Image (cartoon, rainbow, N blue to C red; front, side):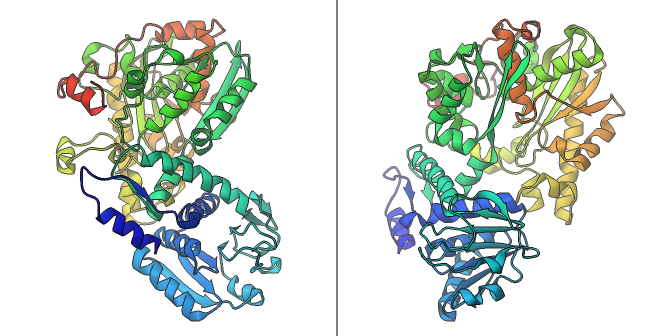
Length: 567
């Protein structure tokens, strides 16, 4: 009935008389999405894995089965009656496709047989009914994850508590109903916010799952220095930071009193107190038009919350703002490297100077940032950034296509933010978005995966070598980011680069916070007059000027402003 109502509502709309709509009947879509997201994160790639949906004939079970099937899992639905299971199977296959079976499981006594070969088990049964006894899952060979959406005692899976959130019990990772519900509410809140960003968005199970993946894919790191000494090293899931920004701010306040905080700055601004940042500043920093989803625009709301606090937060520049980059290299460029990439460079500059026992003015390298979505590169000569190629303008990324052939952009018709996050190695490999894994790319199992790996490695090496022409004899190529920690991938990139200069990973000084956050701590410390003030001066952070639109010729500046909703 819910799907019929959604279809009727959307079919009755026509532009410009349309509004965004979301289907979440009794929370079934967001609950299913949250449960599947938790389980996939714990289990990794679920392709060909055997997934058992206990009592999977209801709204949550059908949607969860569909999402798993769409991700390539071998799904089995149980029901008390065989005909009900068969109807559910047909519904899932019609909408989601994939591999789905149905078996009868009249009561808990049959659970042991049903669970025999399962690698993931989700109980989607009614409240207050125990369907999976502990002996059916505990210490079962091959079983990786169990999850229960029943929060009313007796709970649906015996031995799994409602608050279990990735707890390992009897050799199995367990998720309880309240832990799933916590993510469900964050996803629900994020989806509601999306409805007010545009007037043509339709959120059903699949698109709600896209929102959940976006929230879970990223983290915001906190790294703090007290005159060079590490005192804060923490990572927050983006989902938590964006859905409960007040808690994120409270964490920063609890670490205080703080002299300065280098905040999330997107594509960057000339050094700006967050309390002084205008709406136009934030549009330019995050390059997000009203109603535009995707990209890094979702951080704007967190920055607004930081602006309402008393914290001494500053927004920092991207590569394109720096005076050390010659003007001719900025022509028709916007993404030469985000503010986070400038921060990662700060860490690399500091580290190389320390290792070589040399002054900052002797530092030179090309930094390759191999992230979970984009691949970016920045060139440093004499301790200063002199060129850069951002993730949307350079090499192929894990998720993102990097620089688009102009004719490809023409054929696309419209280049949206969502398109910038698509077309990378994961797309080439033919993976579902829920199954993106750098580790899989390191050991390709299909011809498509081999093409994806080769394309990512070769385009990364070409970008690094081309950028090195901006530097007289770089001392090193430096690697950072998620993919840099996948040994076989990193080796494949390092090997050809070694012909030009030594190549190594950035070490960093924190255990949890990523390289960008560590560099942001160095910059904040230097701006506040701490031990890293010479580093900030060398990078010319205070001298940054202009906006990301200042060097456009192919697109008139006013047209670019209108695209961002600016007069």
